[in-house]
Image 1: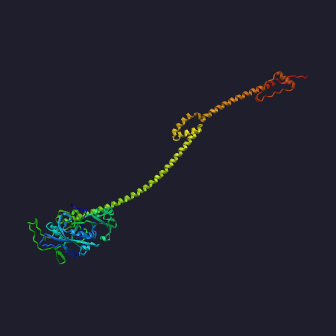
Image 2: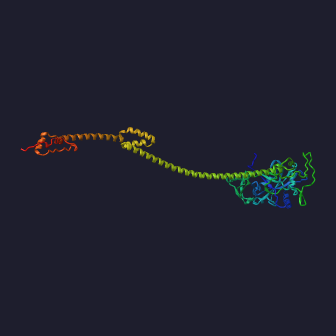
Length: 511
């Protein structure tokens, strides 16, 4: 069963161009490439004219590259020997294999002095994995010639080609470094799986920004079962290493191409003539915009130049995308914070409004209850005012009218006015007043009758003879008293008679 690794990473080398004068740069680069030559495989190029021996620093251990990945000394000591016999391709295109790795070693970072596998196991400082191999010229003569030209300090393509390695692995830790730091000995290691899961989306290898704050950057430390998958030659490297060295002949201050005369391969053994000493006709050109790519240019420029341009354009778009993404994320974060703040304020206002509504509802309920009680009291008072009610009557009325509205109560009162007309105070009073009036009339009539009777008994009128006799006896005017029952303004019968029969008309004689 074929085993597969969970992750795949490419670790690219970077060409170093010191910021010094052109002439001084030449000497420094020559010295650097010269130090790499001791790692060249021992190949008899006179007998094997189709092979180009090369040596290069594949990566810097314990030092992060710009792709956001790194391996430590212990891992490097375990895996480096497994680079032997792995392929060399062009720009990590596995369909364009042009050579093979034959040797693997360690060297000091910056000086390329040899190191043993025992020395590097415990090293915390940066050091190189230095590989040696061959390029198969018959597979891609053009690339072989470009490598040779990149060793010529007089060429515009000097040290233009570097190497980039590929690894397969299943595990990794996260290393946190401050800005501008690259050596992992200065970093903080995160090994907890849950913490790694929280941060992994910020890793460059997963499309993140490579940092967790403005001054804290994170990198992936490859470990566990790590499998070297090969090396690719590239124009766009990432690690802090220098070029690719090959066999050349030194001349004066520079390095020239190998001018040794070599007969071409037999046409029976190869489909095209291999003139190994023809200088590369196609040159590297810097493409600045897509309009620069024309049919004429493509006849002169290398494929790597086009790839370089495309890579730079992709990087620009990627950087722009990352910047726009960060801007949108910041805007989204600000909007989210504003929303959260507004939502919190809204919740406070909502709670306050609920409290106000509760208080208002309580006040309204109290007012309604008060108004209802007042209406009830007024209605009961109106019944008490209009009718003579017992306690039982009031209890029945209270039960009936407590929930009635004004219209229903008016109808109810009209109905009760009919049903309780016998208890209506106004009707009863009118009836009593009428009866009292009748009683008074009757009493008055009875009193008058009695007074007339008494008056008649007291005021009987004397006869004429009785009056004459009395007048004679008294010798004076007869005086008749008026009965008390006779009105003072009227003359009694006696008075009428006394007047009619005055003693002045009579002559009375003494015996």
